[in-house]
Amino acid sequence: MPGPAPKRNARRRNARPDWRLLPAEGRSGPLPEWPLDDTTPVERGIWDELWASPQAVAWESLGWFRTVARYAQVLLVCEDPETATASMLAEARQLEDRLGLSPMAMRRLQWEIAEAPGTSGRDAQVSAVVDYRNL
Image (cartoon, rainbow, N blue to C red):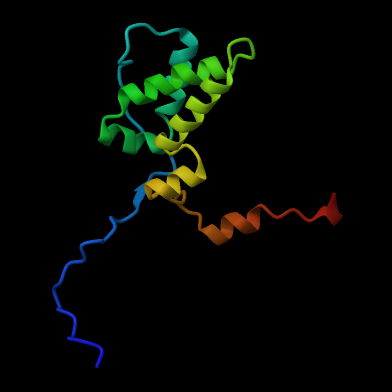
């Protein structure tokens, strides 16, 4: 005998939350204020670009303003060959993981970018195919 029948309204203790769907068009609205003391124009450009991404919708609801600002500063250091070090590159990678800026990180955070309106996954795949014989 396999045991008692499962309870109809039982809740799983190990249930995982649903995936979070992020808008393909990115975050809209005014940019958050820079949360740290000083900023350079280049940092500000990175900040503006990051807050236009789909992931920014989740960051805003989680209050990750300082973390995103710190990532902008680290990214600036890592993009300069004179100042980039192995430890700074590792820090950038870790922040990218925490902020969901790679496919693997998005999967771990259970974030998914919604398809753009008017497209389906199949249409997007088909439109990317190029017939090399016509080139």
